[in-house]
Length: 61
Image (cartoon, rainbow, N blue to C red; front, side, top):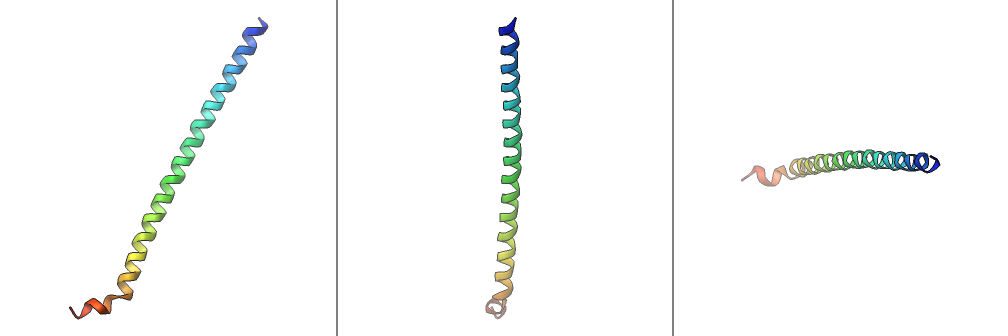
């Protein structure tokens, strides 16, 4: 009996560890998506600012 209860406790710990791993993967995936979105917004803003600064070069064409 003692072995069975200790085995189930170990399995519970493993399951909790796996759930924690899944949650951390979800968080890291969410963070990666946020970083990608921020990077793309920064890229668009940079391109717009560059266009505004250099518009006079292309206005005469």
